[in-house]
Image 1 (spheres, rainbow over the protein chains, first blue to last red):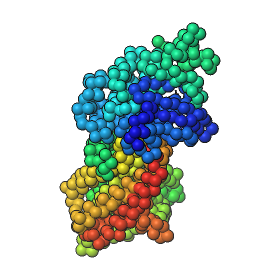
Image 2: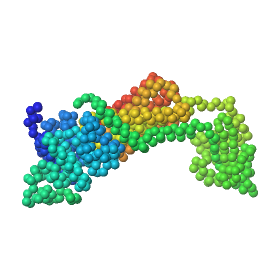
Image 3: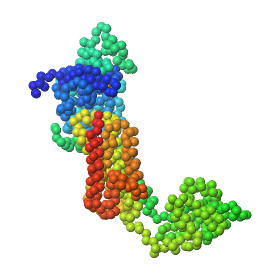
Image 4: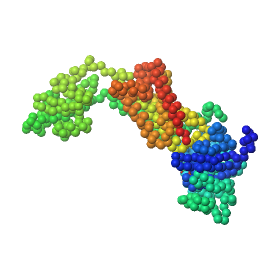
Length: 253
Length: 380
Ligand SMILES: Nc1ncnc2c1ncn2[C@@H]1O[C@H](COP(=O)(O)OP(=O)(O)OP(=O)(O)O)[C@@H](O)[C@H]1O
Ligand SMILES: [Mg+2]
């Protein structure tokens, strides 16, 4: 068994996964292999199936068909173990309104049997020192996203899964989040999947970019592999693949 | 790592959920202030010996009034009572008849002369419940026969009109007032208020707490960690139980000093029953919040459970006023059993033996609802 895991160089394996809701086919046959240490961006427009895919990897939703392995293990039999190894941030979460930033982190730290030192480290890492005594309900959008990221990082996860960590943030707040994530890259054994609408985010942070639309992977590869003379950026590429813009609202900066 | 109980998780969940409650000022008011106000309001309303004032409309048939129409003092009906105070005609009920009674409190009757249509309006508004038509040599009494107070008013006036002295009839040797502690309305009310408080707090605190956290996707976020699901529920119910103990204690201490409420029965039985009541309502609360993430649906569900029990379980008045066929059904409502058990301890000196059966049933109800609820519980 040990040898098997050792030999397995992929930390995340998604094998021909499907998922439907009533009449919507959210994910239609996705395959994905992510080696240890890789940062992956899942880029796609609204309704592409990004959240559904990520939540299946997180063990929150069950695929209708196909298989998902983390460190070579299925969610079904290894939930307790896998929960210790991953860190997640959902597309939208609100916290307990009248709990402070510190208390919220302390609560989640207790789930991992972590002590207050780790909470203080996270507060420093996410730059929330000044807000640690503020109720979560009074945080700004950017501070809330940084808190969500802090919660995801508490247990020093081997796999980080972030669903749109910067959506709705202004460019400054977005760069603050990028800076935190860039620091994580220094750790060789941490892998990450993040979903985004923003091509700059994918370009800035990720080694591997996966373009999804209507529940399928349209194209994937490193940035330099994806771009060429005709497609000078990811938006151009998306247009040439689908005839549509990546971001209908085109709030690019 | 796979230990059955992880104390640290429970500890911090408990702390977090406890802070969530006590930082919400409204919670403190509705949980602690409101029941006290209710006990004061209802307690004073029903325990104070007050003067009873009854207003009566008098109608004089037109043919009996001749040229002295405006001279109200000559209403012949009122002559029957002897001395009557008059307060001037701008007052709608200018005639006042006071009957002193040292045992039952003063009876004050106020009479006003008016037309039939005005009398009816006053009746509808609840200002009066008796209309007298003065027919020169006899009076006609009009009132709703189903209204006991109107009946009483009629009987008293009838007696008075025959010049019998009311206070002579209701004299002290004949009437022995039962105002011993433990037999007053407030004694009946306080255990009921405690039971109702526990029900409300469990339903709103636990159900609403779960539904709101599910709606915010916080539940989903928490179970995506190694947090044990059972620990979340244990902490949530534990916080509620602690708050309920605190709230009930405050209500009891308050009514102990203000109204002299006391507990005749066994303290151990009280503790056992109190916990059983909490288990029962916590189970129901988990059951109704098992699936929905919509707080408005949650609202409706909670009200659908809480409202009927508040009315039917004999919190404010005995449920024996309901039709006979419904009594057996009402008796198995958890709130009826809980309030009834508390009353038997408070008022009748009940012990473990008296509350064993209700305790067992309450725990069973709680356990069954909790189990079924958990089976269908939606964490994501
Ligand atoms: N619980 C659900 N019930 C019904 N339909 C759903 C559910 N979750 C997702 N869908 C549908 O599945 C499709 C994919 O949704 P998903 O949330 O995965 O998209 P997304 O790429 O994350 O979009 P966005 O960028 O807006 O977050 C959408 O059409 C959505 O309406
Ligand atoms: Mg999404």
